[in-house]
Image (cartoon, rainbow, N blue to C red; front, side, top):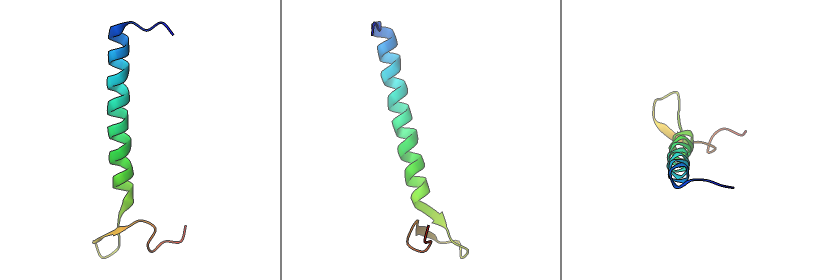
Length: 48
């Protein structure tokens, strides 16, 4: 592929932000709020 330095830099930045967004969302998905309002780890109670 022929990518200019500017495009490559922009691409790396997009990938960087995408990874942060994905990691934040996965961490957020780890915690579910139970009816009592206290955070529990996903998968400890529910049998998906």
